[in-house]
Image 1: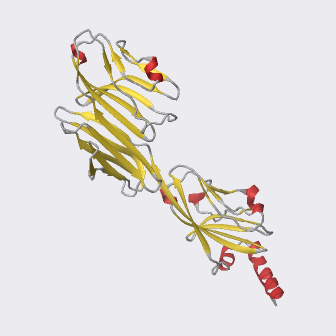
Image 2 (image 1 turned 90 degrees about the vertical axis):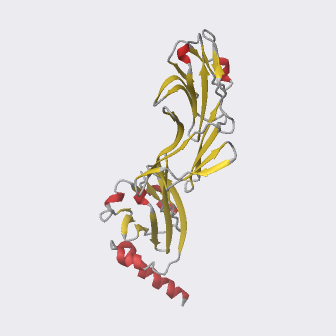
Image 3 (image 1 turned 45 degrees about the vertical axis):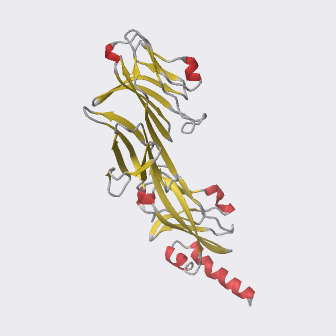
Length: 334
């Protein structure tokens, strides 16, 4: 009896495997249990939706999202006549791996609209399997922290150009006070979002920290701003403006850039630039200099020679990587 049952299943399955109609083939999977797996991808990047099966002859593969045809393969070739236009030239199977039981789907150039549930149906002469993959898509373009001032106030802006889902933004002031910042501006009601979060700097506070977290991608970026003591110098003297990265924010093997600028009401001007990955250095004024021995020890303090009265003002050092930003403001009085 057991042998007859196996033969009955075999001869029932073969016509559906070899046919081109999805309906009868997929209907045979109605009582097959599905294993669910969650896959997280990044906006604009590629991802693989996994699906494995026990290898056998007469392989039929269908990938579907709800009632949408994502990809089909049978009769030893791709069958894409009914493929939804959204997936054209963006999906493919690993053709050389199908005989090894690999029906995984390669997904290119992800969009937020690609989020959803994908089901892989595979049948062979030996049996059938159904796998469910939940695809989640996140975005997190590296945020930035900016220091700006006008005639009356100084303020900090933490912004991220493209993020999804909506991030968690927190501010920390002087190492002891946390602020959940709710004044962020969001652009795009469905995402990705463009967010600016801004706080005014008060005279009694000398340290601010902003953190932007994407919980889906398990990624957090940190921005920190500090104010150094005011420097008082005489004309014609030299001065060293201090700037050194914190090891907790910038590990030794991490790429980063350093910029020095002068900040005035409503504007700023670039003074010097350094990129550690290429050792590229740019200095825009002849009275400015970096000491090579300091740079080699990760100290980016800037020397200003032959001071003039017009050199009085605020100077900003910006050290940034893809994980963090450190802003240091120093006021010079000549």
